[in-house]
Image 1 (cartoon, rainbow, N blue to C red):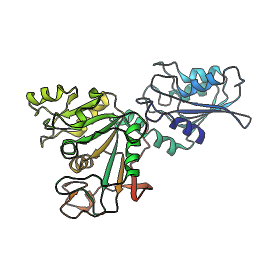
Image 2 (cartoon, rainbow, N blue to C red):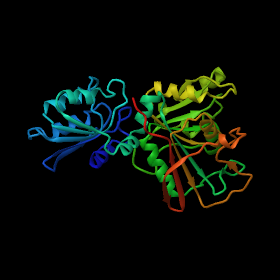
Image 3 (cartoon, rainbow, N blue to C red):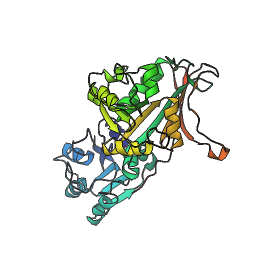
Image 4 (cartoon, helix red, strand yellow):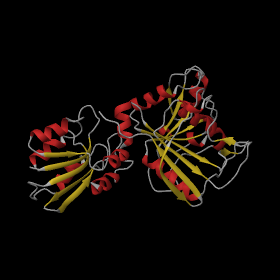
Length: 362
């Protein structure tokens, strides 16, 4: 199963909105072959494995796969039918597929065909790998990663908004790697106004993510770098009905896509409604990079699945801008608490990685 998970990881950033899946065939204690789902629309891992081993004797072999094989027709034919036809004796699965079209039906179909099926091997690792897919399928919204780059005293910028650079080059490269793996990167309008970011992966080799700006009134400049990228259509602006027609035409003239979402009582974008809208547009994961007001809104709404805090060995002082703005808390019991599952070091910067439960079932 470790090999299957490693195979599945090769599809990072390429399979969405499908999950990442790897498959390994074993017989008489020997590995016959391995394969993975390469990209959305391509054959699934199980079929790719069987095609690779075509002509070999697969009867009585075992196949290890990190996710329940599909049992329905879509862009490809059911993987369960292919496994049954190959006379596989045993299938070992990381966990069930929460897709309502599968959701235990694939396992049942294999067992009805006389195949031994074992479920739950390295389940936590398998669920963590496909956490965006599980969230998308069970909650109807994208998986949300919040990232904060801050000083030792919890500041993300000077009082005048200047923040280049809080963290070092090694940490910035890791941020670009994350951008390449997830569907979209998101920032607030104030971050665009203050930093004028490009939101690309220029520090590494990889594909640029979809860029999303949360801007309730469309106040960002038409000259912002985010609106001047070569692939302008891959910049989306989330706004509300409070945006004027003049501003809409001004932004649309740059080639960006405007999505109008519901506004909350404070006039700002209702993030729960906005995340549902993004899911309707097929986005399975969103990387929220800031700033402090946007992060506070996501935390207050309980909209986060993983939280990364990158801490640089610098001090900015009390007049600097806080990493998270006011949450409106009045009791210690209201304080959001996180579970740290990994610490990492990039150059001189320390990363704390925290996550919520990934055990989302059918």
